[in-house]
Length: 448
Image (spheres, rainbow, N blue to C red):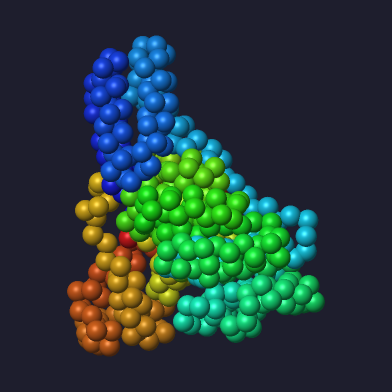
């Protein structure tokens, strides 16, 4: 989970403060020293750390905090506000500009995930804003880069324009003309990257930018590279004039340095983050939500949005009707778990819930293959057995276990989970219409 180490350290610092009741100025300064060390260990830029700690300290040693009945909570509130401001304050939306088609230029080093992010961004904007995008392949140096973009484009249903190894500026010129002819309103350019910044790469991207006149020039950086990502962002911004940053691999074992430093160092906002490997794993970057997650306050808004994307209203209504009529089957049960997987890993989902400590999640062992075994077990049943699991006797269970490569114990465990979920759902249905969907999700979380 992203920021795991930093989050755990900060939560422990504030927990110790909370155990002391009223605080002295000396205790606050000692806590700020620990915060400073935690941020430096997370690979946050030193200058950024110094400014952040000074800003928090100036507010935290004020009389309204030290004389408060809940000084530790006041300090957490201040840190939350300052973290939010550090990462940009508020969400920064894309500017498509007046030109049609709008152009978004993606730049970045090789290996940052730029090509995949081009596809993710195209799919996201098509789904959420009704855009009709085209991807343009301008990485003519990396082996199979064009093929990779074509594969990504096919998966997300977005056309890809490429013209082999010809001059990338000419390819962009042809692509924009094609987009105009095909009435497409967005062009996303995937430029070439290098393992390190070099003048040739910068000159080529600058030439593409001069011709394309993009509404957005976004740098794609790997969040797992920490401080190096910030240095890369500063160099690209100086050479190209960025309008924003996209952080990839924010779901990995990220120390946090890039997300907490890049805005302050470059003055450019983080506009999106990659939160997984699937082509749907992209989210707008909300500084306030990220600050809350780092401090263990959860991120219920993002969790709700993911749930709404995974569970559409029609599915929820159909499921409600089945539960009410006691027609909820094993096939429905499996489908709910498949929908849950779309929301991300279980650790990631739990990390968005208020009060869940990052240190606690570190030791939680969740069997990621459980859904696969569940699907194998249910698929080994006959249609009648799926609809009426009560008929499953010992011989049937033995046959199903053999057919699914599992054990009879695992079959029994699945049936027990199914029965518990069915009973709980029926109970939730009687608690009122307004809470049905939320309770349904709560039940699914409870059975993970």
